[in-house]
Length: 153
Image (cartoon, rainbow, N blue to C red; front, side, top):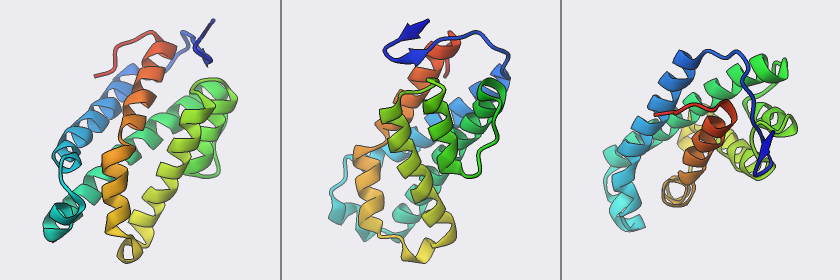
């Protein structure tokens, strides 16, 4: 059955794991929420604020990737070669929409920059992501909840 281009199924997945990772995403998003109301100048003034926001962004992205890897293994029966490829697999299998997958692929790639090239990350880009792209993670959880016919925190 298809709902807005996303396949709906009832296949065996670890619901406890999915719910915990979804809660991790929601918690990180809640911690990032105050930064969305800040101007760029306000945000950049405090190095601790910038560092904390990068951490929460990594936590949220890591949880989304963990969910993705689990679903790729359980539903698509594939092991992705990269974090970014994982979201492409879910889109190819109609587990998430291709538009959302494209945005999550960019987020996974940005996560790699935050982890591996931390000193080279433009803090203005982090603020931009916090202000304009966090809804992608909400949409991800919504699409997955529809697919699995469950509530995700």
